[in-house]
Image (tube, rainbow, N blue to C red; front, side):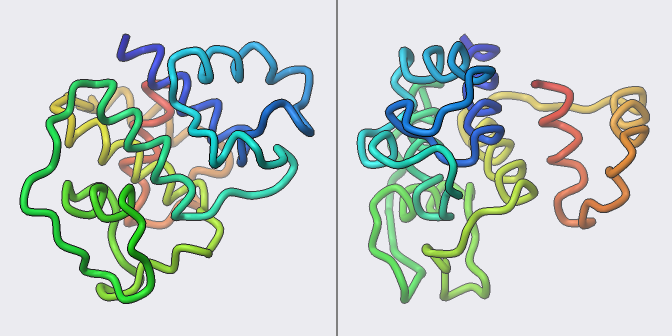
Length: 167
């Protein structure tokens, strides 16, 4: 189940924004069907066009779906730390330590999410659900061999490497 969920989120990253197959590339059809069949794609995202980008707030919905599918417990003592959103998925993800503000009091929900932010969010979700995403030195060496890995910001490098390992 873990492998399917991780693969499903990888498809979300690759597609940038999910849809009801509007603008869906043929190479992504099987992956989309897999992601959709396990219930990761909320309707609020599925009605959009694949050719666009996904916002930070939109990405929180499939992330929280993934968290609950991994049997993550319902967060307790939920408080909203952000001035610019009251989205339930964002607030739950924040309370679990999955997402953070830019700065602390602003989530910037309408900003398009970057691949680095996605990587950090995915690993944060797995960690919050109690899944060990350990990297060995060998794992890191393989990832560092990617031509553009040096372009990764320090704050995201380990999580990008973990996403590559668990793809």
